[in-house]
Amino acid sequence: MGIELRNITKRFSSYTAIDNISLSVKSGDLVALLGPSGCGKTTLLRIIAGLELPDTGTILLDDKDTTWLPPREKNVGFVFQHYALFRKMNVFENVAFGLKVLPGSKRPSGGEIRDRVEHLLKLVQMEWAVKRYPSQLSGGQRQRVALARALAVNPRVLLLDEPFSALDAKVRQELRRWLRKLHDEIHVTSIFVTHDQEEALELADRIVVISKGRIEQEGTPQEVYDHPANAFVYNFLGNVNVFHGRIRNGRIVLGEQHQLEAADDMKNLEEKEGRAFVRPYEIGISRLQSKGSDLQGTITDIRLLGGQIGLEIACEGFLTPIEAEIPRELFKNLELGRGEKVFVALNRVKVFAGDYEI
Ligand code: ATP
Image (cartoon, rainbow, N blue to C red; front, side, top):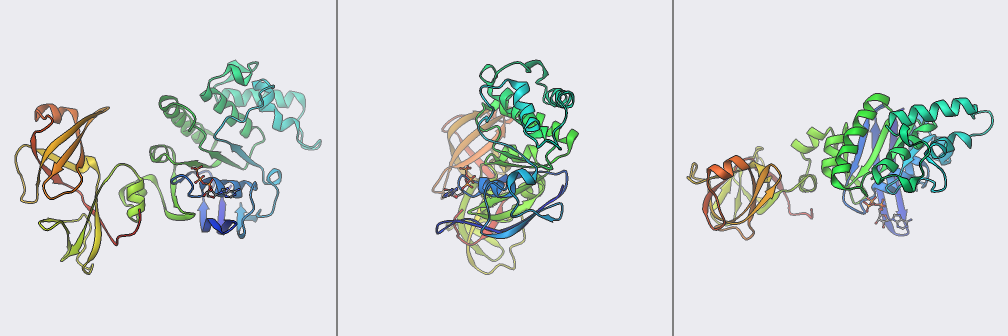
């Protein structure tokens, strides 16, 4: 089931929550709507589900205009941020609910309902819990039951609104991988909302980055991560050093003395304000100067970041410290410590012209 949104706009009083969004989702894809809090992700999801009506625009499901259809006629499965299971029903009853309330002609027989619920509970690896009540399950288990419940009515589209955000980091990561595998098995066209860029990058076939009700970029995780369309996307997709400067003669000049080559050609850009972005792991640290463009700095802070070491380095001529991430092995070999002097190479610099808000 493909989804097509055409020029969707939604206002709440004078506030424009969705600003002329158009988007195509291919049948069977798992798509992430990624953006900061308040950017309109949930509103867009609710509009697709029919829980909210757009002011203008059209929603096509498999080329059929469904803009004005009530939610139950759209046949869309929804999983919310907070477990919306019925507290007084056990797991079996929760999953069977959507089937039992179907109108007579569409309602399967008791035996068919049992088979379908058992099949779904196996799919989400919760078959052992048929008789349990939601209060007897962990948060992750409840979300898996919620997913089985959403899938029970064979939805044409599955919509997930930050389904794992209330869970701790480890469970969230497990469920993410599990959901990806499940999606590869059942291939139901799915859209999930997240403000967690790692979750979007790991899980989605395509990512739609949204800011202030508009799409900033749409593409595969690799396209969006490796080729951010603008400063907002670069900044939003993970930790990054941002330097303000002036683009001049094909380079960006930071302060008076530091000129940087950018990853992209800037020769055609006229002289103007610009910003240089460098991700922490794209920064080289050494004891010896290898290039004239290396910066000199002093380590002011050291942090353990799992497999990497995070360094904060105060560099001459830079107002804010530069953040670098280096492998633990290199950190050990260089025998680095707080207060030590190092040379810093900004290896892959991405420059965006302009000084707009990010
Ligand atoms: P979050 O990640 O925090 O859930 P979001 O990107 O999902 O945020 P939405 O819930 O879509 O954001 O809200 C977008 C904007 O629209 C917000 O500024 C919000 O305050 C506003 N908004 C949403 N629903 C309503 C409503 N029913 N009435 C008025 N304003 C609303």
